[in-house]
Image (cartoon, rainbow, N blue to C red; front, top):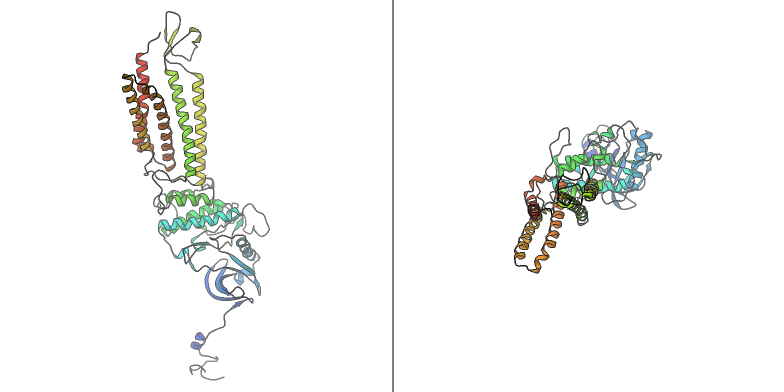
Length: 482
């Protein structure tokens, strides 16, 4: 052997080349099987290392995940690794890393995956609230797809969310994914009393060893959203997020799974509605079909209110009744007339009151169903500072009601025929005012706006009922039993 390096003539120490030339020498690329040419390492975790690779058969760049040799000798980790390959192979979604192949080479298990030319979300934190909401909304879209196929990810965190060069989200690392309510062989690897995943992102029931549930991923997505905006996980009494995003996070992080979003699509809709990049119009962030349901419930509420007012009016309208129509406990003692009849000033009208109670029960049930739907679909928003735009229409109805009443009084002096129809028009306006009032109240309840902060709405309602109240009081003043 030469005593000097054949490349640079430097002294040798028992080597074919000097250390500097050894480091500079081009080594042949590492291969995996006959089709994969491995490149640099992209990342490493508890379930293996990921390398950039060239798939010689497909002629394209891919990512290859290898189970460490020490782990490959353990049956549990080998099964979990194989499970990830099967889980990803079941999923074909633009926001989930795709699997091309899997196998073993010289006893080394591997998964060939789509190569994402980008960065993990953990390297980009924090992000502006609007961008963070958009990213987590795409994560929720991927989770909804996986959940629909019975797969819970169980390890949603910034390191497992990749963003490609165009900013599109790719959810990766299904290494501890599990089928919902499945006892299929190979899927129940983690012991029932042992939590899987990263503790900060685990729901309380997951840490307690509960069976996999899609709402565990909802909790992790809430942690992900908070950390994406602030750069730190929500620990203890965490500071609120800006605007309506805070309500989304706190609902996703509810300790009771029943209080979280019902599914990932509901959380996605809530994120899109709450995102600062897509501000909702004042008092209404609902699509057209959702507004239709509000209008239907508001109409039931208006009918219930109208029936209650009718029952009240019938009960307080004085009249003269025959002596055999006087029943105990339902009529205020009145004046007995010379012919034996009774002047009734007020009484309990059974059927109108029962009709009012029936419509009230129906209206309450409809409102409960609507509120349940809002909560399930993630349509509730915490925006108490957002004015209710329908309030001004209540005021318009009130002004129109008073104008119609004044016109009717004025025209009746001239005995014009048109005055005959004004009471009917006034009644229609009253019903419209009640309907718009309830639309306004429902919108206010949905966004958490206190009703006392809508004085225009209450002023309009007061003006709307002023004409019938005035007419009723005038009637009482001039009524005499005959």
